[in-house]
Length: 575
Image 1 (cartoon, helix red, strand yellow):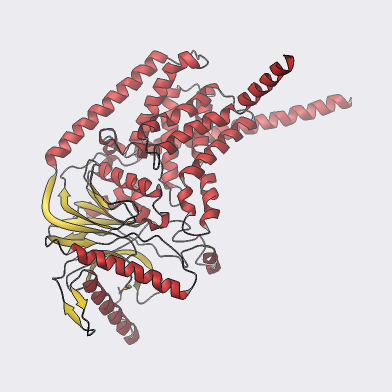
Image 2 (cartoon, helix red, strand yellow; image 1 turned 180 degrees about the vertical axis):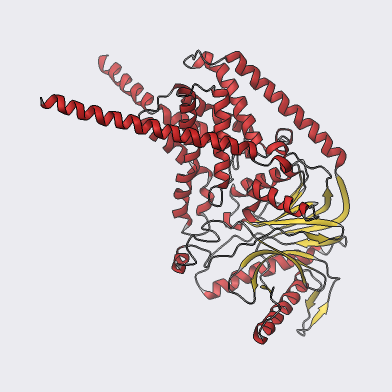
C-alpha cells in the first residue's frame, strides 16, 4: 500500500513538474486547430487562455518552467508551419529554424506579461492585449516579416468578427480577442485558479461581454453598409488556376518536361476560358508565364542590346497571343487566327536589358501582345527569393532552391483596365498589412486610387497544405483593412474573389486546376486604417520594448546578487 502511494506521489510530482509544458502546448495547439486540416476557428478564441493561466500562476524566476514553455511553443510552431519542408531538401533545415524563431513570440508574451503584472502591478486586462499586439507587429516587420498564423487569421470564417480590422488593421481583432479572453479568464479564475486581490473578476466579465457585443454590433453595421454600397460591373475576368506543384528536377530532360507541363496546362486553361465570350481579362498566377519580359529604361542602348530587346519583346508578344487563345498552330506549322485577343495580367520574370538581375513581376499585356505596365515585387521572401549577403557571396545560393537572388521592385503600379484601376501584389506581399496599405496610399496620392487588389501567387511550393489557408486569410484581411475587393490568381489554389467586407464570392479548389470566372466588384468605402495605420500598435511595441529591457535589467541584477551571495558564502566558509 505504501509503495502504491509513493508511486502515485511520484507520478503526481512529475505531472506537476511538467505542468507549464502541457498548459503552453494546449494553448498553442488551439491556434493549430483553428486552421486546415482541423478547421475549428472558434477554438482560436481559447489560444490565449493557457498562456494567461501560466502568467497568473507560474513562477518564472527559475529556468525550468521557461524552458518548458519555450519548447511547447516550438512544437506547436513545427506543427503549424510544417508546410515549409515540402518542395526542397533545404526546407527540412529551414523548418526547425523558422519554428525556433516564431515560438519566441508566444514565449515572450508569457514572460513579459508576467513581468508587467508582477513587477509593475499592471492589470492583466491591460497588459496582455498590449503585449500580444506589440509582439505581432514586431513579427510582421522584423527583417522581411512573417505574418502567417496570427491570432486574427483564425476568425476569417466569420465576417461579422473581422470587420473591425478597418479601424486599425488585423491587430485590432487580435487585441479584442485577447482582451475578451483575459476578461473571461479573470472571472473564471474565481473557480479554478489561485485568487488575486488585484484582479476584479466582475469587471473583467463586464469588459469581455461588452467588448464582444461592441465587436458584433460594429461588424453587423459594416456588413450592412458593404451590402448597400457594393457595385457589380459587367466586366468578366478569368482567373487561371493550374495545379503544378513546385519541383526542382535534377536533370535537364526532367526540367524541360516540367516547364512544358506548366506551359501546356496554363495555355489549355486560358484557351478554355474563351468559351465564355464575355471574358475581358485573363489573369495568370506568379511566374507561370515563362517568356522573359525584357525592358529598358535607357534611351541610349547599344545595337546589340536593342536587337536583343526587340527579339525578347517579339517572343513575348507571340507567346501572349498564343496563351490567350488568339492564335493557334495549324497542322502545317503555320500560326492562324483563332479568337480575338484579350488583355492579360501575367506573372512573369522581368529583366532590364542593360543590366543583370531578374525581377519577379506582374505584367499587363494588351491585345497586341505589348507590355503596357509592369509591377515588380517589392518585398522579397528571405531565403526564398534572396539570401543575405548573397550578392557578395554567390556560393550561398547553392544551398537554397531559388538558384540566384531576385531584385526588388521600388514602387507600386496602377494598372488601368477600361475604367478600373488595379493594384497588383505578388505572393506573400499580401501577408504584410503595412505594405499593402502603403502601396494603396502611394497610388491614391498619385491620383490613382485602386478599385481592386490583385494577388498573383505560386502556392505550388506548399503542395496543397495549410499554407494555402494561411495565405487566403491574409488576402481576406487586406480587403477588410482597406475596404477594397481582391482578386487572387494562385497556382494550386486558392484563386478567387473577395469583396470589401472580406466575404469570399468565388473560390477555386485545393491543389486542382480550374478557371474561376468573376465579375468586377467595386466599393466606394474607405477605412480608418488608411489614415491611422499601425500607430496604436507601434505604441504597444514601444511598451513591449520597455518591458523587455526592464525584464533583462531585473534578471541581470538578480544574477549579480546571486553571484555576490555565493562569493560571500565561500568567504564565510573559508574563515
